[in-house]
Length: 213
Image (tube, rainbow, N blue to C red):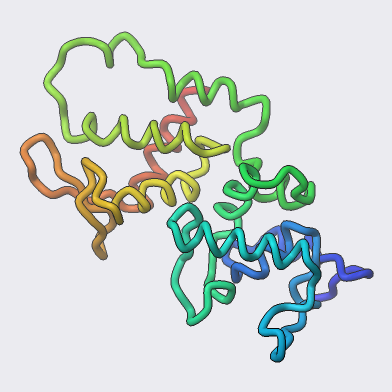
């Protein structure tokens, strides 16, 4: 990979990455080349300036509290992997100076023009949903998924919505009761355990998106 001059990242490469280390995501949020960062063994930090140090500490703090989800823990938080799109969506709500390349390539799963229609579809119940009907297994989960969609920048971004739902499952927020190898575990109206996988969520959101076209 060839990065650009003056320590700028090669966005043709980084813009296509799905998973990066947390410190790499923070560097990209400042339009810094992650490959150019050097670790100071004596200061126990990266030699990347105060802005990077502050942003990395904020990111690590949110990761520790669950606001920013790590894909796994690899010894140190800054070396742990994150989904770059999910990071970009989270970072958009924290900082207003993200590089255009990060915003365009990662956040804009739904265009600005789509957002009002998306929010309207997610926020406004249709006539059928307001009738008094016996709830189904899907009905119990739908409001939780829609709430997660409203809480992220791009409601049709399955990765971002999954991150919110996973955080709820980890805390056993109803209807979720935990995590398993099969996905997010939740209880239906008969208190029977069901599972939501990432593929299930992606398919649901895809069907919802097609209805707006």
